[in-house]
Image (cartoon, rainbow, N blue to C red; front, side, top):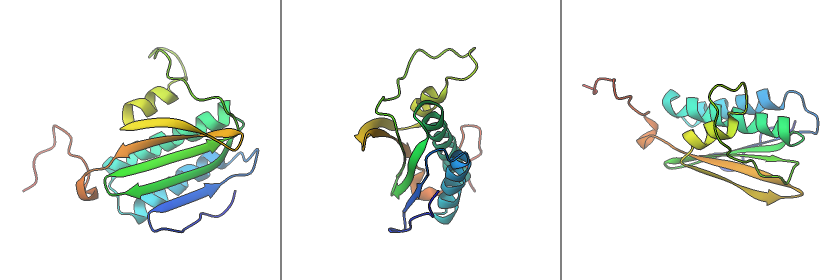
Length: 148
């Protein structure tokens, strides 16, 4: 696993070696740290961490492990992208709530504003865009009282 690359203030990237058993945990920690550094709220962060965990886990289980994680924040959108070693794109199949496992793409599809894949270096990148709350102040749940 390589060190985080800190080019732009709202971009994080983490690279992984083949067979890195700690890749998922390191990737999740990287996303959490980026969210904290960018002062994004827990309401935004919970979905982001879950999407990152699903993308990283899917890369580990189905695609020879993740090669790279990137997280980008631009205004009202957070993009999480995981590059792996398999050219086979994920498939959103019929969701079966009673099954154990197999919910990753369904979860990403539910939480992301949009998501997709693109070929990359013999593998692919799976990305998901999450809508952020205005000014990063967090979404209000329907049962939350209005401020003030």
